[in-house]
Image 1 (tube, one colour):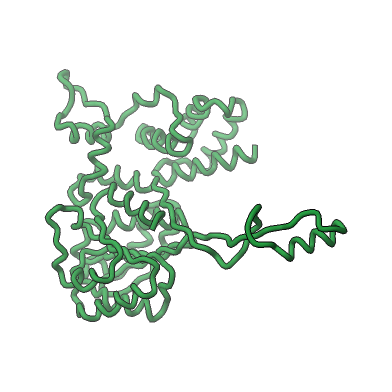
Image 2 (tube, rainbow, N blue to C red; image 1 turned 30 degrees about the vertical axis):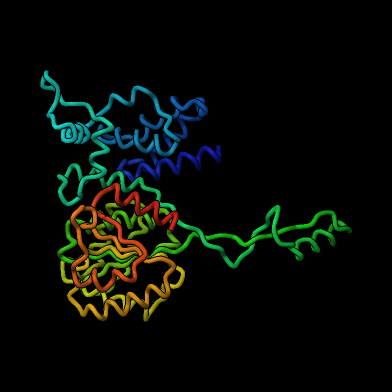
Length: 357
């Protein structure tokens, strides 16, 4: 029961991150229901969770997606018939039709979701953007691992003299040689999110991506907003609910929709902190209002310290994009990667890049 409770509590947390009101009381009701069911039957677990954790019809498609992601794609077949106005609208947009011949709404299709993944978030409707944000909440960003100074026990590797001698003293003889190896830990990611006026159409989606990063690796992620000043917002993004986290972030950032002085802010960061060994991600369109030479100097300094420097530019997603702004021209020689940041698919690719940097 302890293992079952831990599994279902984690599932409830996933639902809350996706916007389903799966609170503590509903989770307790689910555990009471499962006490009378066969927990090895995915169908019984699915329907027990659906009846106890969902509060409104809008929760049903979110529940289906979370159940499929959390339990490896196993769900009851009848769940495929439930749709909402949002998913029907997405399917109609993707297929170029408003519905069937009888005037009914077209059912949601995989092609509709796939088209939405590649569309520019700045050109989405409110309902489509909300759908993208819900999918971002379910993103579990991996992280490249690095060797730690600490050791862990292993079947092969260097001889662990201390544990071997301790065992010999306890047993009276050397019965077995103990081995050890270096442990690994996730590499720290430092994310700078540009909240200037030119980045306003993408700032909220970038912050939601930052929230997914913080939720995946709270101890190995640091997030800052950049505009006219450098503002740390990691603590605000640690809240498990994306909406609450974004509200706290909006209160903490004093320079929304201002200019961008990235060179001065990178100088402040590198003076106060260190980027040594980190994966540094800068999400900006490169419209630098400060001195480009200062930005060039600080980018060179950052490149010497960081393990990898990745620049995320929303305009990079278009085929005719050219890095012609002063900020981009100053930073380009010191970048390891220049990637797009305009769509859900671009954020998924960025997440993969962070996992295999």
